[in-house]
Length: 149
Image 1: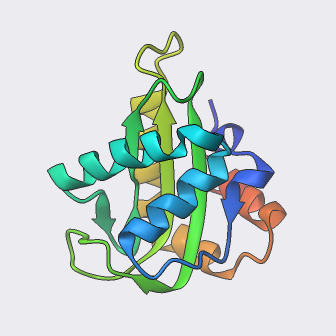
Image 2: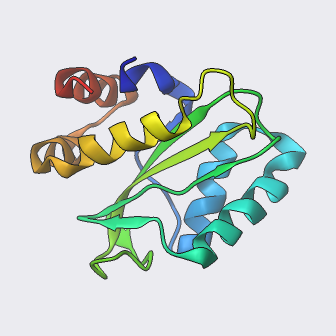
């Protein structure tokens, strides 16, 4: 299982417009294209964030939840070049957001392994520097493939 396999080209936004954490979560949910269910999903993510920020530091946040809104594991990437306040553990702005949503019962049970792979990928400063420079979804996929996660 390679991390790149969980992303779709139309679920990557390299220029998030959000100015707040809440706006960023909404934009990320919109990328999933779940229509009228987006409000429900946003509410679950907000509830998860209220338990503790998913901003893991070094400019990265990995908001995640389980929901019946999706029928399979979905992963979305968004980038905010100038960063935004996310309540991250290091109190620094977040530039890279990886949203993970999985159904409550998942036969493949990939939710936690994918969360772990994203965290592992983001621990490497070179990977984050490369993400800062990507200009297209194709570039994003190359970075993931070259990182070998």
